[in-house]
Length: 456
Image: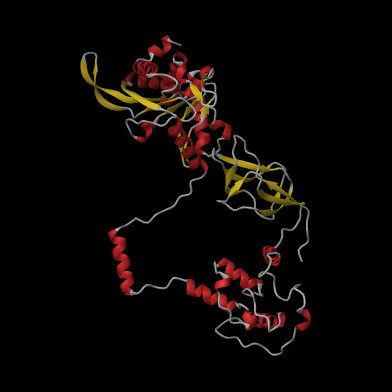
């Protein structure tokens, strides 16, 4: 008999940022483990990022309410913790109790159903094993038959399939067998173990005939890899889909682009790497610095549209988002107050956020609040793009790959390091003149970094 223990249920907490659900990625504890207050017990993935969740109780883990891959809403049971040293409930006992409480058709006949205990009879003799089944199982099945014959009056036909043994019910459940579809062979319609096993055997796929095998092989050869695959749209992938769909639906965007000679900027990067390797300033940090300077000169692009109040909101701070590719998909961490940072500060923060993103440990607040996004899609080996604005922002700068191309420099055609810059902007916040002015300023800084120094 299982001893009842005082237990506390910890429910999925509100993870902030308006998140309503999370997917269980990995449990850090198991049933029977001892946990301390604020110990991390599970890692979940929200629509923003992967989050480690601590438990506010100390004691023994009695139950994990969801397995990996399950999606829970905020407030749903997550983990159950009892007093230290409490024994977790035996799974078989839990299943037995659930069946007893399941209602009509699931209550075990002859166990507390009333009226049947006085009608029990005993039969002597041993059951002879048949079909290779162990003698113990045969004796158990014979006992089930005896209970079935005594459980209900013979004149009353069963209204639902009868399963006496919890073992038989468990076997059916584990193999996905519908009890209602099983033909009973026991007395008065009782479903025995052999009935369930026959149903399992009948459901197993048979070996195809040579003719069928040949036809299947021909079909596979004619159309390889055409089988459909369904991938759940959830977590980060669903958040990205929702945001981009909303962006396309609400923002009247336009894109303008220009080719630039990035040789000068690369020379500056290489010089900084030689003279100040401790700063770790790379191309992305330099481009971020240029964007911040450009947004100071063209604040219209550091804005968003409040459709509810029919207002354009020009943000006083520059919270610079940047696209980062991770194993969980594309995320956009945000460098807050980028306008207050030096180029070295920007490089350090970009590196820190990129590391957290690739480790799946970005907190939700690091993915919100951006006012402008920088997307270096050149790392994927592409030249140009018309990127979708990261709603609710008003603009996004894309940078293509830097490659050697013929370029007129100093009156001669020579090979130079050339890249394409593209600016996608919300046409509600400005016209093409402002967008073009910003893009031209960025291009001038890339081609001649002295322009950046002169304006900052």
